[in-house]
Amino acid sequence: MAARVITITSGKGGVGKTTTTANLAVSLGLLGQRVVAIDADIGLRNLDVVMGLENRVVYDLVDAVEGRCRLRQALIRDKRLSELYLLPAAQTRDKTAVSPAQMIDLCHQLRPDFDYVLIDSPAGIEQGFQNAVAGADEVVIITTPEVSAVRDADRIIGLIEAGEKGPAKLIINRIKPEMVRRGDMLDVTDVLEILRVDLLGIVPEDEHIIVSTNKGSPVAHDTAVPAAQAFRNIARRMLGEDVPFMVFDSSGNLLDRLRRLIGPQRKGSE
Amino acid sequence: MSEDQVIIKGTRDGVALTIGEGPWVELVAGLETRLRSTAGFFKGARVLMDVGARTVLQPELEQTAAALARYDMTLVSVISTNAETQAAAREAGLGLVVPQPARPDGEAKTLPFVEGILLRRTLRSGQVARHEGHVAVIGDVNAGAEIIAGGDVIVWGKVRGIVHAGAMGDENAVVCALYLAPMQLRIGPHIARAPEGRPERPLAPEQAFVRDGTIVVEPWTIRD
Image (cartoon, rainbow over all chains, first blue to last red; front, side, top):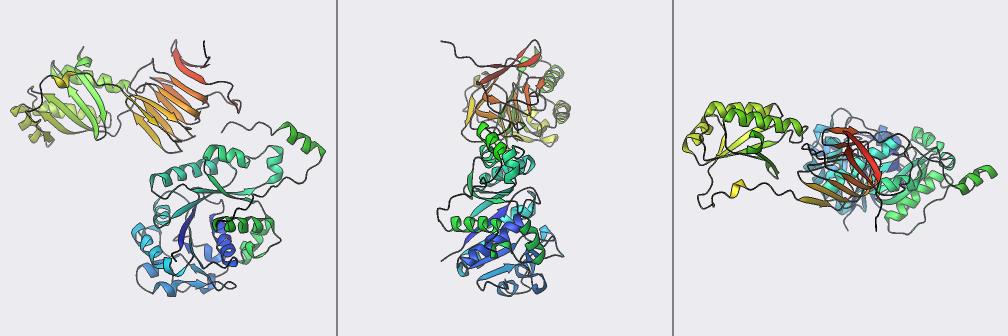
């Protein structure tokens, strides 16, 4: 069976592409899927760090593409999940080291042996992004509930539409329920009203992410953490399960609840 | 007068320029006047110039190319049935199109028919819809997207981006939308910004037009 190749991208930097890629890879792995995560951010390698595999990198994506090693040799097996692999980016090269055609070819080579190929795209809309989406069957856009991130996501969705990847799906990352409740942050509805694409998941802001990233152990391993639950839900949705979206609305004092009843405060027009 | 002898028409392959009768210098001046009023609408365009049967010499062609270059347009080819003009075009290093003789005469004199296009999708940040006629959108025009229309613009959705109606200088053009919260609104040579802090929900569809030299926005009222 051939793998689904899914690129995770955002336009804007720092919204959580790498964290999401790592955690979806782990979540899919925990669900018994054979997964390879590709770091397409050549020159700014990160995914290996987040997955805790940085000191195992011998060969990288560019080595494999340029024939210095076999593709299999560049794949690093995860520490905990035997069916999860990482294809790291080269750190000493730049985005021009690989062409979109080579990325397409790379994905073709990986398809027969895996269920999912997840590609972590660099920020921006230049060649690095073009490389990352070239071989993809589907594209997942990450945004945070900020006007600038949403604007960039909109741009990316437009670019995806121009190719023939099918409609992009959206993950809204780093939602702060408390701020949404106060009307200080765009909420899910606001973001969807602008972007008008299918929602794949909502991930709450969570300090555990920073801890786990620094430790090189994706938070998805820890079932007790809300963000981990969110990533697992997304993985299950990718597998076709109908998982309801998380609701972050269980607390708040009387005044907050009253305010919610009255309705969210006006946000500046986008 | 000489302006009327110049027809500028956007096509899929670039800009088609049809030059009529009159002294060449005046025609070029007329062309420049027209281009000045189009506010960069044709910027970057490749131009195909139809001069019909008249004799146009090499310096005149070069003068025209220079005039177009001032508006960031490139004269690429000349259409001519005149042997002398054809030779001049070759000398000037321009492409040459010799129309098929089967074509009936006089047909080229008809004015371009200004039609419209309908876009049934959301225009997203970075996307530009450019059309010489009217533009209608069923969907939103998101922040960072642009519509540049020679005629009117109708948006069945929200306008948060930039809309330019009457981009070739027509002050009578209008912009209608279910909700207008554009970054900028331009009609002909006029530019307006939506006031800060617009309410999140529209009260009624709105229409923007030029009155006494300024863009005004009024709710669209259904009259029965």
